[in-house]
Length: 367
Image 1: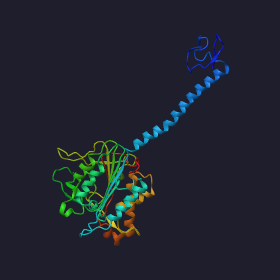
Image 2: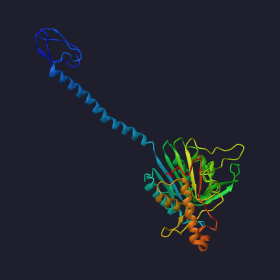
Image 3: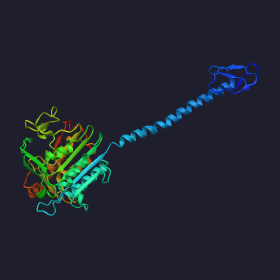
Image 4: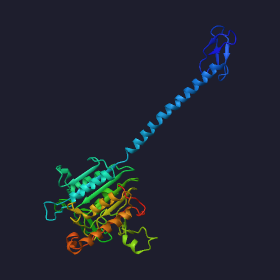
């Protein structure tokens, strides 16, 4: 309220108005920044202004978490966990294996319960001979198409996993891109008719497309699987053991193509890490040595067991513990079981390879 300085008539002054003409005597009354407000009315004006400002602040504060949540939700939509799990038993052939089906179940449980992968077909694709859908049988065609699905439209933040349990073989390297003169391969269920899937194909299909911020883990429980992804660095555990511990906590060997015109083996900025059951010249084992667990691949069973027992384990400690477990099994079962357990007494040891070097005893293992 404001009082006319001429006729003393009271009237309402519009908020923030500087001048107002009296409707009775037509005198122009002036108020600058509330100077014309008197006593209680002036205080009321300030209260209204304060209430207006506080109201705006409350509205902003209520909106901010929603905006932040919306932004965070939008970013989370770009983070994807996707896995391809292949278990090949070759059940209609003389080369039959009994462990891969159990291995796939073990690995899927680990992904869902420990690493929080969504338990649906959009995020975990399973290929085994137990599946009813013909597209879910681990044939060469289905594995190759599923490898493409695994990396399709990958985005920064994505975590991808390729798991294979089955037979692995070697064949002569005809293009001279292998340091040992052999290409490593995995064997689909129809490999006798359709052929094997070589490391060069796997590399070009799931390693090349990895963009910056995308991480792929390959876990391969098969014979001759050491460099099955053709990654250019191989962690050499033996070098670390024979050198000075304080200076050799990481030792990586060069596995890049030795040819004059080498094939591309790198990612598109992302990172690929491979854990293999054994070296390229070794054989992996299925065993019933784990009581009450049926037939299992040694590497898969130990990997899952150790990770469940050590939630924050590093890559280096994981490799060490897996090797220790294998040594303990050898001691316990000794002469009677060695031939059956290690297939002609060939001893396997887990192997780590990567598209980038990293400190294996500092980096936590996560999928």
